[in-house]
Image (cartoon, rainbow, N blue to C red):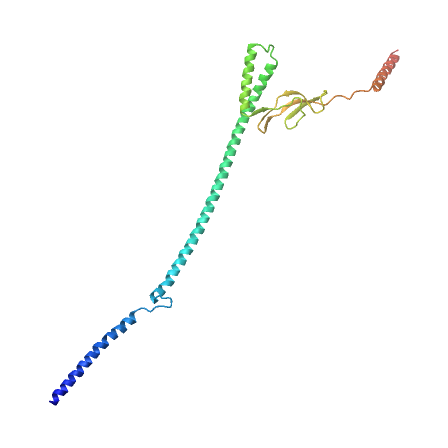
Length: 239
């Protein structure tokens, strides 16, 4: 009887121990799981998130730096491109100017060769025996046509007759006494021509050196008396 009671108490004690172990097992598992859960920082971020922040910050700074470098490179390329465009524009203008000057020089050389022909036409018409002759009229028409063609190419005749002598456009062949003021062109021997601002040939002219100063009556009488005396002396010597 006593033995049975002892066995019953032992079995009850064993059951209580098993229940106690079962109830304590979940607590240990919870503790283990709690140890795995990441801790949070003051800002509410976990340790893993806070560990990722430095790498993300470094990558953004690298991107910004790369953009700044690319922007600088782009500005340098743009600056070089603008300089190349400016140099090409200057080269184009310089070539256009050179081509224009070459054309002008070629035209001037051709016109210079034609000027003597133009002079001969003018002289022939000036000395024509009958200006109303149909042949002379035909020559005059050809002469006018030639002058018009040369005028369209820029040929301009230099005005000289009655003008004050201009050494930049006139070439003086002689000076004569004239009623015109001193330094005035009296006669044009050969016509001068220009093309634009370029002088092709100066006008060959004769320039007035003015009138001789009039001799007063007293000086004139004095000169006459001197001549008479000289004549009387000659006649006496001869006698």
